[in-house]
Image (cartoon, rainbow, N blue to C red; front, side, top):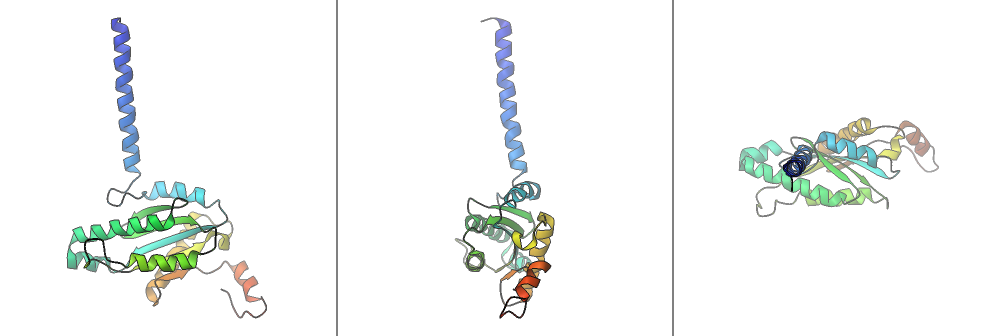
Length: 202
């Protein structure tokens, strides 16, 4: 084998190692190091694709009293709570959805509600999220959930739907319920309000 052939082979091997390293770095940059969830930009790309589906639901989740958990049990406990919340959200959303950590103790998800059971699924999820962290029964709190069906606001893109889910999430924090659905769009609310036997929007 000539020196030139050996040099070319060595260069090819070095380039392959560099490429693998770069791919891993890019993949890591798109993942939150604590929870393993998508970071905001990576989540946004996946969420926009899912919103093309007519049964897409946008969800916003915020851990209640998170500072109190940190102050009482320490930052390691707070990190464990965030990791547990992320894992439970990921499991609930399933393979058809995506979950991202927007920052701090706030998470977002988009999933496909093919069987129209989102209210029941999210009520169950709220109870699951309130369970203690595995192996640390003293570490637990509730998580407020706000959600919106993309079909209720036809043509609205992800930023607007996230704002609506955010408003619903804060409404959940102010109420006795941990889950709150965003209001219907004006046109849909008007139609619902004029149906026989209905007094107002759903």
